[in-house]
Length: 350
Image (cartoon, rainbow, N blue to C red; front, side, top):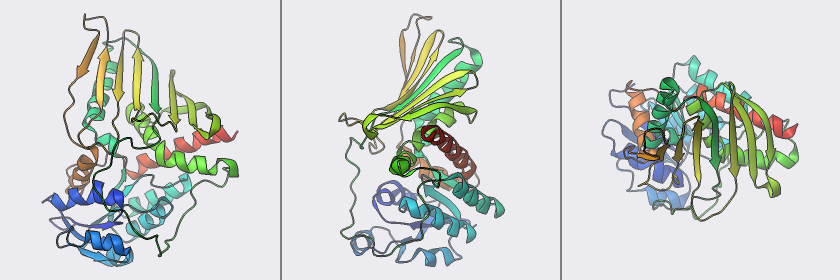
């Protein structure tokens, strides 16, 4: 590792432009050496916007560059796994967009490649970097430990958002389709039947965020009791258990004009609830409220700090490269989340 970590960015599309490049370019603790992007309209947009970083057409050139310590991957979902594997096998530390893969078998291959080379492998579930999520998890752990609101009775996670419901930060969309095709991996396990394959791929892109939040709060001691599709291919409902605590998850394709996502934890004597903002809202963080009648204050809106989760995620990856932190979601955690996703869909398919 260089004293100042050298980073390459693979992919120059929307997410790379708004969620990765600005923060690595502005962080004096690292240096962006190259961006891999071949689409002419995006090359033109990136030229002059990435400082002294080179723009290369082929990500293989970036992986072969021994001066580059780490890569940030923001590519089509079906190509993410193969490119991540190539990066890990080239000895690069990796931050990749989610989902890391679409089957447990794929994920195990990736985790094994990183572990064999003792590499940092971070998966981009940026909501774990939201200061409100961090504060809520700490508060939830304290409530469990102190029993201040009595025992936990039930947990509910919900996500009713079909689109961002907030304009994304300024970016350039490509004017052309991808002429270069990458190696791809399947977007579903072989046992997923044809009628469910598109729904599974959608869930892995959208609902895996919610599975990642469930495991962040409740750990991986989660078993699936029941799962099924909502009417009209409108999403998924899941019943789970965390030990003896019932847990529910609903991910729905609803367009209400606003982003509706959150969780609530019902205790015998109160409730902790969080409301997660649109990922495109740079000024918003997750809001947390604790409701109880025991102290004469029915609702307490807790101050949680500021900071866009994407920006804090980029800082977190540089912290990892400098040996000052570990990923909020590492490859093994991502693999375990993916195993839970598969368990959910095995119930759907049953």
